[in-house]
Length: 171
Image 1 (cartoon, rainbow, N blue to C red):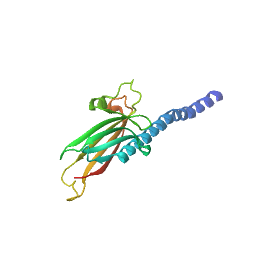
Image 2: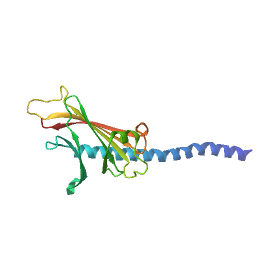
Image 3: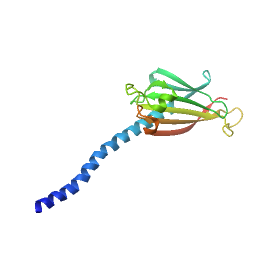
């Protein structure tokens, strides 16, 4: 009787602890993914530059410290009241892998496409009333960025990190 009571107490105490340990590993993995997604967003915003020659904002990829750019992606300047959208695929290390279309962004990549882990939706809007800061001053544009993972799932099933900032461009 005493032995069975002891086993019941041990089981009642150990089972919740084991459940917490099992769930904790998922929380750690989720936290690591969110941290990496924030790094991808920060990298994109820090490298996003206005290019008068290409009449838009350029997303640079690669090692800019050594001027080894792998690719440039252009988000054209939107007309007044409109938006310009770009869809990008990044690997787990935050390197741009490819430009995507909206359909792939919404439905997810193929499970065979293992190089893409983060999907990025960059939306630039501007030209609305109140966005111009004065004559001769640069125009301001709102950049909304959504970094989502994992890439192989549909849009509704991904974790999302969102960031909004203002960008300036010559008029």
